[in-house]
Image 1: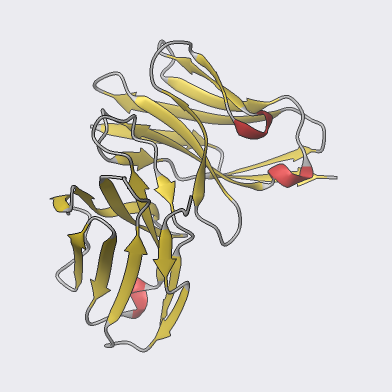
Image 2 (image 1 turned 180 degrees about the vertical axis):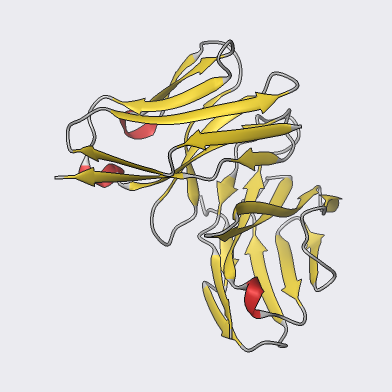
Length: 112
Length: 115
């Protein structure tokens, strides 16, 4: 079985501040991990993914995430928030290439 | 390249009516997924297909829901009869196949309102 927990359903930061969105997972086997972003009235789109290899992965729009096996975490960060980053972010875990399990999502608000 | 295409984008119907949602996956993708998104329950996987064959339909809420994939380029999700609690955004997603890493490509969703 696999599960995903996103800590904090709402995160608010000032423009230019660090963005940190937390994700912890549980999985019986090494998982594939993903972050997706959803803008209003749109579908989800992939930000970044971890499959194997380097544990620090870089994605689009300046986001990155680090896979920490010992902590079963895959937190998403961005050094400097931009107004356009305001959206909902979902962490997901997939075993092999089967179905993905999504977290409940974190809404990011960026204040001017 | 065209992404995943869903229709209709918006549907308003009355309780008891039949609803059919449509999806065209990305060409060459072997896996197709139907998700439902609500405020209360978040993103729920309803069913997924691999090479047009349903693999896991354990998320389908009840017999009122059915899904088909008659060929590699088309899938439908049908609700009959519809109920107000079916109101949600329904997403279709496709994925390159069993040898890939599980990345999903989502359509823009079909927003269903059942009155």
